[in-house]
Image (cartoon, helix red, strand yellow):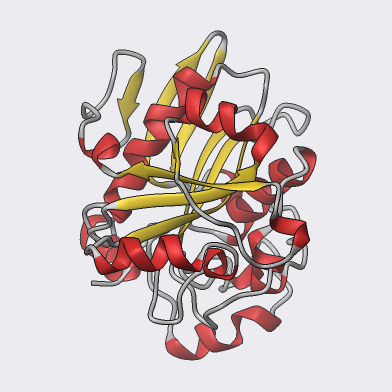
Length: 265
């Protein structure tokens, strides 16, 4: 079952989850987006921003579009929206945070598959004031396919071993969090939103990522990853990196919501 079909089954006909027509999907990468564009509602697996080109800032209507599986969260004096990106503008807001944090933009990276399946979680402020509007947390995940993952170039043996033992892998393409927001308060709601796709649709068992060795402690202590014993291959540029792993059981064990989080119907 595709993400678009799931959305059409769980959302009203005029919601952000409406499915793009086949012609629109094929031509989406060549569109210039504006608030009136009929292509602004992107597919998660092949967003219209695949070329990495910037999207025009939308009007109020686009800003007010809900995230998929959206919940409301209060952090201090901030009201946040947490869910999955479903429009080109929402994806572009996530990219802005990645760029501010010096993290890679998945839409401009060399792809193994021409049609990757990805899901993007966002924690966004609800303020309409442009100075306060933006994404405070984003996690980009990509599903493993027959073509493999970008990480196979650097960690082929470790990933092959996981697959041989029946693992269904999802890779972290990129992630970033605004330091002004406590990570402990937004991470679990974001993982709950991702669970709808990663567990319920994809049936994934393992999440993997790569990071510089100097950042491994942060990923392990703050995000819940553990280091995988692996001989890195792929050239000298990757010698100072480590492969990290997290079981999707962490998502499965999360409660439906906590006291500060409210699901939005």
